[in-house]
Image (cartoon, rainbow, N blue to C red; front, top):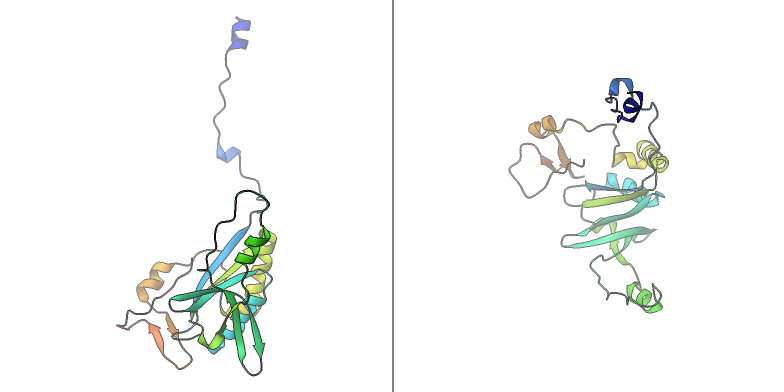
Length: 205
């Protein structure tokens, strides 16, 4: 009888979360993340008050570029040039440029493929001609970089463009009231109380 009892399969005890609380410290976050922040920085052109924040985004060591341009012609900007005569000129590449697939045999990338995929000169666009609808891109390799980027957003020139919150706000009341508006430097506005539906309102989650 004792041998039969010893051979009987053991029934696992039920898991009770009350007696198995999660660890007090969560494991470190080690995954990389690409943050894309679509913004509307004016009505018909980028507001002058947003210029400093936009240029600060380029100078951030976490910046992966800015997607923008003109209507029906998007450019991926990677930097800017500034001089006293021409002001600020954005420098970027046309993401619609295509090249042939590289050969499957041999070393990659080959010299021929690099020559075909390399632009001779970046596209240029004066900041004054930039459409106000843009998307900022930031590449963060781990949680430590995310925290550094969040402090950078909260305490620097980027604070005029972005905010980073602990939790999502209650959008239902915000959208129902439509108490937000976009304005340009001339005092024009889009938002609550207008009949024009040509402009879009953006909420980035």
